[in-house]
Image (tube, rainbow, N blue to C red; front, side, top):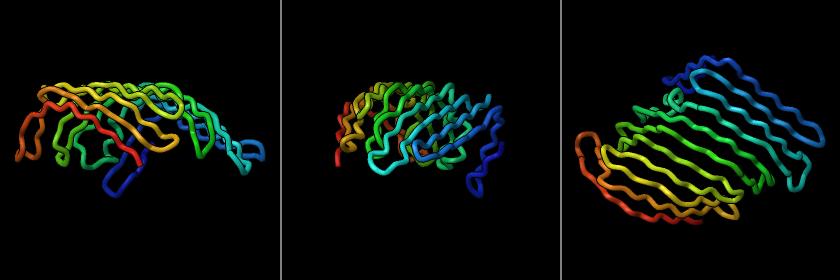
Amino acid sequence: AKWRTAQTGNINLALEQFEISANIDQQQANLRAQVNGSQIGQLEVDVQVDPQPGDRNMSGTVKLNQFDLHPFISLLPELDRLAGIVNADTRIEGTLEQPLFYGQVSIKDGELSGSSIPVVVTQLQQNIELQGQYGEIDGSYQLGSGKGTVTGQIHWLPEFTGELNIAGQELELTYQSMLRGTLSPDINVKFEP
């Protein structure tokens, strides 16, 4: 399959399976999707929603198996490099207005660089444990020869809030050959509405 995303960007994917189905009746709306290919891995979505007015209860699963980010670099023209393998085994509950997410999401061997960002991120290893109304984040990364960590929590209910700790030793920053430096941060970032 060839997906055209912009006038200059295309995604060319050889897919073995691409199925999307939606069934809606008065009792339930069902959405199922399966995408599978040697270049991108596997994506499975199975979500049910109560279409009746009111709470609109929902349930379902989203699974990613060896999902490769690299083929999607053309969606981000400011990047020169995008890599990483995403695995996820998640469950969705709650309502459309107050969704609850459970399960795990991981990114392994992530890489990110581009002329518009002052860092070259390599060896990104990130785990997210979804606990209903929030997610626990724990991971590591490398900037140049310096290594760092990112830990914390992000809440989406009852409001979008979070607290992260970003730490590292001798992290290398470079911006278009004009700026070079190292940074050893230990920063706590808190955000709330």
